[in-house]
Amino acid sequence: MKKTSRTTITRETERFLVLNHVSGAAGTWCAECAAAVKMISIVEAALLAEVSQRAVFHALENSAFHFTESERGTLLVCLDSLMNYYNLQRLCR
Image 1: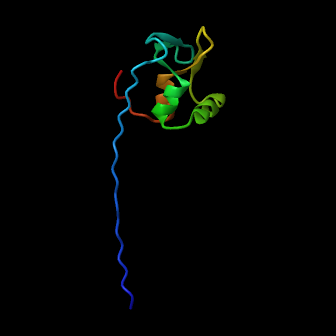
Image 2: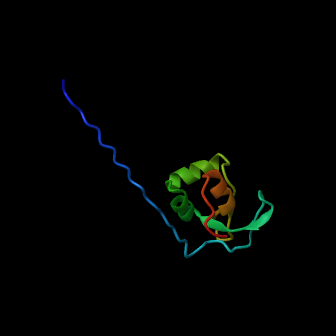
Image 3: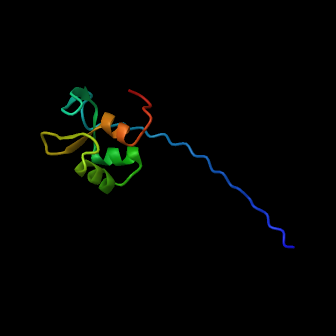
């Protein structure tokens, strides 16, 4: 009879992301939230959610979370709705 052994490897990771530069001011108006919220760029949204920028655009096209366009034409994502959509923990406010 052949003996087999099984080894289980568990890897635990921790991630800490700091956004030094938030694209939108803390009081940018989100029409969907009807409140002044933090708005972030597509790049920052993708980094925070750990998805590709393409995935963020796809979610935006499906109205998954809120967004607005800045005066310069930059697309800004509502941080509150992004965090709710991706079930991200709010580390700071």
